[in-house]
Length: 189
Image (tube, rainbow, N blue to C red; front, side, top):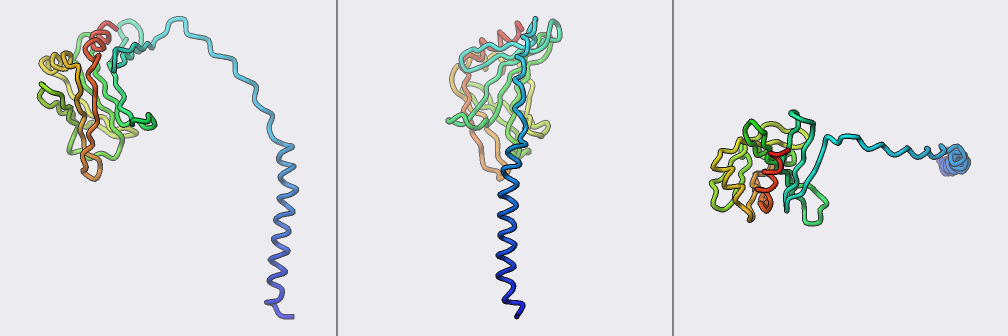
């Protein structure tokens, strides 16, 4: 008998063995499945919350910490129309005795030399410099008093502009509706 005549029967035997092994293994695996874990007890609410949120039209004020270590910022998240993807986060962080910073978090893969530009009618373009990249790229700048006053007075639309890694412009709409009230609330903490 030729060796080539044995190959089809060997394949058939191997195939039968695989099916037989899986036929016995699946019921055994189902019998040894782990029992469902008991439901965890709900966490007790903290007596004194250290994180608060408030909404001011299109801006949210987030505050964290207690007393003199409490920090607040006005934040707007820019998302796709279907809300499936976050495109950028924009924050205005005002410290009670310090500068006011504008911070933008973009996705990674941006063209870093182009920086980020905030455009709004009646205000000179505000350029934010990229500082670092990780899960997000962080660009920021310290706002002058004139820029701050103009941004607080704005209630219309603006744009955040940067370039992707292929040097194509990315233009994201930004609303200033509620920014003035959100900044006042963030200063109060």
